[in-house]
Image (tube, rainbow, N blue to C red; front, side):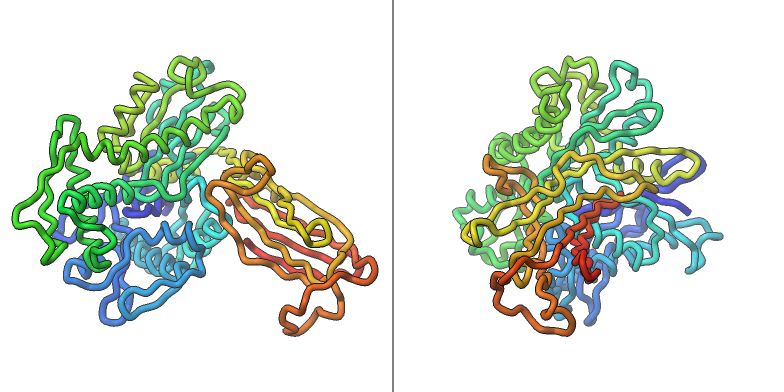
Length: 512
């Protein structure tokens, strides 16, 4: 049994490999109806956590719950702890619990002969293109602990590119072999330029915004409604926001190309709720969220820039012979304003997936199909570097280790490797690793920045062994040992750092 699983910020979708077909699985919703997703939602019920549709039902009854926790994983990392009612867990534990419940749901809807609890579930899974190393490691490990056999981890827009090639094979020619993916999901935005050829798929360039998605469009509508009532959003109780955002999400999803106004009851505000529903003009809402759409187009422009591709640019992409199309996926891309802006720039080359929320899961299922040799070449989406001290400790310099856009190893290949060697000058090395989306003029990290935990490596041999804590860092009286820092990136984008004393063999290994 092989599946493609798109763990989304608000919804999780699963597609199966079924003899050359890749159907999206249906699950039983709260009313007994078949639905094509499981809500990425967790709730506290009777002192324990429940997930998915069970969490949805509990939340409807007033149970404490948490939505969009995938965003917190990107913002804070897997060790960040959250409290849901009386239950406190790390984000890694929360994700593992959700995926364990998802596995049970998949088994329930699978063929009878595959429902044994020991059935192996092979999966190709995804992460946002802009995901950092810790997010990638946590995703892989959580799936494995939940009982899945993960064969590959793919960036979300890359999976959409695979689905485009499967669905629109006739659009791909020797002169038009690139597709630009525009992926606006519930919590993140990703863009990628993917080269589609007979020998496989190659990601030419990628860009992403860690926190830009449907959640932001929902909140913008909520804030607009509160302003209409003369209310300050900061004064709305935290307990009211989930129901308020849910109502705004439903109103947003009801907007069609000809919709002129939306109506909101805002009962979640309790005593502050209006006596009559309020009516908002869609044009006012569009003006409010226009900067969000423009930010997504800026990221799309980054992947089409001549600097990134050497061939395509945003200004002429609509007529560029090498571009087969702009493929629009992600549930939040249904807002008509998105299609309007894209068509203004790219004309008829814009193709919206007939299943925008399921395109990534379908692409992952295609990649999971052992009957198809789906070769995929990914690239690093973030810069990785380390701060080091200079000028006798008075200044700090950011040393780049891997640059964004560097080709990643393919599945089955050895890791991407970078090595630095030097003579230690201090008693303890204090290494501050940073991943970032961009670099400024002086090579300083900018954009989405992810600081990893600071690593302390004892250069002075007398400090090694046992728990000696972190002593004051001083300069060595004479030249210290010769040190090697070895950086490895695997096919999933997970970074491992090995720091070794080349003279006595002492080493420590860290996974970022």
